[in-house]
Length: 118
Image (cartoon, rainbow, N blue to C red):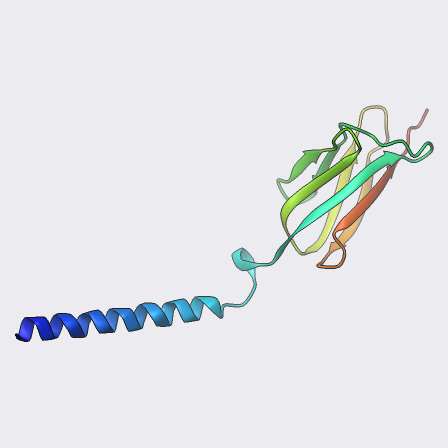
C-alpha cells in the first residue's frame, strides 16, 4: 500500500513540474531562437526600361540566405528575423544593387532597380 501511495505522489509531483516548465516556456521573451520572423518579398527590374529581371541573385548580407528571382522578377525569403539588413542583388552585365532595409511587421516588401552600364 505504501508503494502505491509513493508512486501516486511521485506522479502528481512530476505532472506539476512539467506544467510549470511549459508555463515558463510560453512566457519566455521573444529573442534569439524565439524571435518573430517574417517573409521578405520583392521584385527586381531594369532601372531604365522597367522590365522585370529573371535569374537575379539576391542575398541578405550577414546571413546564409540567398535566392534568385523568378521569371517575373519576384523573389522571397521566409523566416527572416526582424531587423536591419543589407540586401544585395547581382546580375550579369548589371551593376550590383545594394539596398538597406529595416525589416519589421509593416515593411516586408522591397523593390530594387538595377542599372545596366551599357
